[in-house]
Length: 464
Ligand code: GCO
Image (cartoon, rainbow, N blue to C red):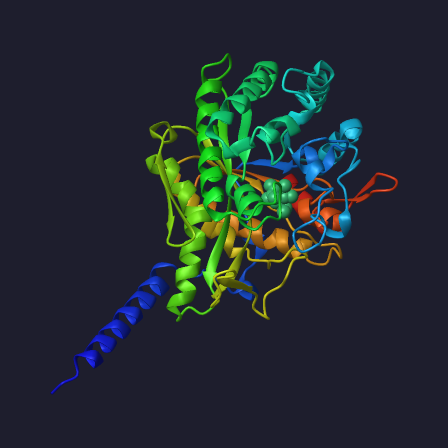
């Protein structure tokens, strides 16, 4: 008698092999031989936009918001929320030194500056609008324009007033109205001078860090809630987009969301379990947002972790462009633990940045390919390296810019590139340890100095 069990096992093994092979082929991990690449071939179109980017909480100083509250706290394991209990504090004092910062941009040769408006400074209490804060940004925008730097506003870059946090922030769909009102107010103020608008910065970063692993405020660890908050942030973008379009200057303005793509690749390409965890993380982090704007359907269904779906038909036409933030990729290895289902891995031969990820120039090409599914003009709204020793910055810039130039050569509609960041600044949970600045900042004297590793960027942008 033949044992049916053996056939079953054989059949299951065949299926596993088939799927592993299928994933391996369908999701290649792009790698180039950098030794054979000449950076002299790099070309950018004449009208390509060059800029730098910052965010209010990271540079302005003296913010009182959900982040400044979080900076005081400690995690469940007793560690401080921010490395070494650092506080954002005075940051780069850019609230007072914006003219100095604009001078740095001019010296670099960039034509655009992406910055964010600090909601908590404009609306410190639910019923109070601070006119001096509104005037402050008017003055800053005027100064940018006077210096021929085009302002690009981000309406929401991770921070909000404490009163909004107390209401449950984006955990509740009904709170979107408060955010929409704030955006309308800002748009009415500045849209006659500014026509390039980013709504929300990196919703998936904010939700995975804030609600999945608890590294950002509100420090929760609740996967199901993170799926809901992500959906609410995407719906908030859609609501704001359509509201702003109806206002004066709305139809002439370019309004879009900013999406961070971080690829998750399997540590062992021949292991189906590594594919399963990368599928799960990519679904939440990358694909759900792309699918939402393509089809109006939001769906993150990861058995045992999160299970949520909804629809918003207004999402399909809710961007004039897409902002792409790109830094790197991570390898994931499946782990037999419900609490920690995967481990992040790095290959020995890869060059690390100071952040827990490597230099992976090819990745920005892949990310452009992915985001191009939305059929929108693409702006790289952030890309840069944390490199305190300044011994990898030039290499980073060369490789990533080369990859962007290759994407343009292949026909992708990439129209601009904003380097993150103009200055060293408060890098969220890492505090001031991460040095992303083209300019080094001495935080005791506030003196800014262009880094040697940034000279290549200056050279390229002044060539095109
Ligand atoms: C983010 C933000 C920036 C970061 C930058 C470097 O991705 O967290 O948009 O505020 O500082 O990405 O990590």
